[in-house]
Structures are given as C-alpha cells and as structure tokens.
Length: 128
Image (cartoon, rainbow, N blue to C red; front, side, top):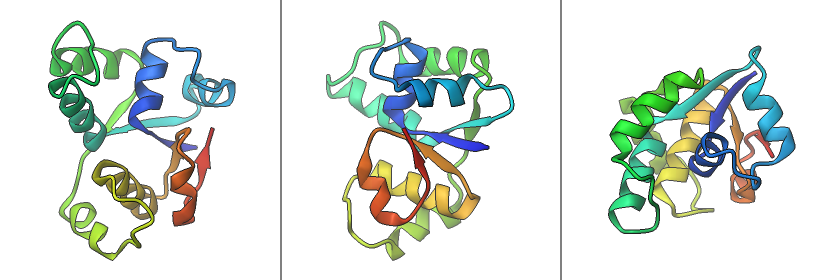
C-alpha cells in the first residue's frame, strides 16, 4: 500500500506519540508499505515552528533530513501538476497544505494517513 502521511501523523509517528492510532502505527511500521512524506508537510512543519505552534528542539531541516530516511520514509515532491490542480478542487477545506495532499493522493493513487476527517469529503482513501 502507498501511504501519504499527513503532517500530524508524521510527527506523532516520529515522536512515538500515543495520539497516533494503532492502525496508523501498524501501517507505517509495516515494511511492505511504501510511506511518503510530502514536501508540503515539511513546509507546513517549518511554518508551524516559525509561528510558534510547534517545537522540535532543532531546525526542521535538520530534524526532517535525519528522521525521514532513518524511518524508511520517502519524500514526495510537489510537481507543477500538483500545484495547479488545487484550483479544480471543491472548497471543502481551505487549508492549503491539506489541499495539496488531497491533489497528491488523487493524482498519485495514495492513501492518506490522517486523523482529519475533512479528507473524506474529497472521496480519497483515508486510514486512521
């Protein structure tokens, strides 16, 4: 299964946070699954650190550059098609980071790992 981790799923997994569901943890740790982290999530994490909504104890670039490969996760780039496809999405949700994840899930056939039920309005597969 090809999984796209939402930002909170990524952070909760990396921090061994109990808020990560047992189902999500099992799927992320299953070596048979391909786990992806969107550059959009890395950007969102950096923004949240800058505005004081998140602390990692080190710069996000250092943290993510170490933890993503260490945990057998792959980065998913943002293509021009991804960036421009958000204009055709219905406005079920206005969060630009989530909207980009929706487009990536649709175009790349990915399942989103997220506690956020707003993704369900887009008809994509979400696991929690």
